[in-house]
Length: 401
Image (cartoon, rainbow, N blue to C red; front, side, top):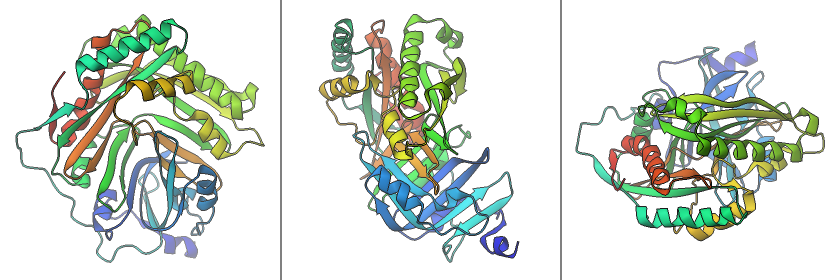
């Protein structure tokens, strides 16, 4: 217990955002929604001491962390992201803190900032919203939908996610945007990834890419969406378009797990259930499987990436078609963000419901799942509906719907 008492303390009055506001300038990560023994926790990490540019190296990097006795493994995790093109960027924090409200503990590794409990920007005085405009327009988007449907009719793809970026001026700090984005305690992973060079990703991802815990892999898919105030929630369960979109995503995920898991262990644990999130309701399914003894965490991640719910089915044909139809590269959008833990456990979430903040601008990108039954204008509206609540956190209002 003496060793433990040096590494943890009762939860302080300040929280993850206040700690993030206190750390020195440089790369910073705040991940709230990381799971420890079934409990939601938050990690703040800074002062990188190592980096990895491949998934295999990120797994190895995570095993270099020296953890205090009894500390949860996530305190020594490699933190980072995977871009849409599959490029990983992970780093090992020199300092990290784990807030565990369920256990009433704050675990630390490395030195804390000398001035703790930094001031987080408070409520922003009301101002007229800035204008968030789509970076490619409705007419061109609808043309792209029809082009995708022609490829579907030819049998080249069964499902495709077509995305639209929206951009708006934003004078708010990443912590201010994060505070507004998380004001209603959304489920999933709330995060800030700041590269220390003026670029931040701030998001509230509702959907994991993949979680791996003690060799058990878990997927949780969201495909099929309605606005929660539309009065059409239950329509999701019967709408042919949404059911087709969801079913093909689940089948791809099942095949992904079977590549690296013991085939007989792969199960669909929940199928096509309504799941409510702030402002939106989705169809949700859950799958799991036990990783084969000869399969690695890196191979699991590669098997599941990019997720069918943000790319399409079949995967490579969908990626190729997205590159042809989307005029602006995705970069960070529809990739993943999260942690690779010592010992090989993985907690990665999709970079959706995410803003990129850079150079006084906020960019949000949202997608709609296309199948042969899709209506182009309805898919455009879905992209706008998904962008509105995220852009609102940056003080912007989506136009062009």
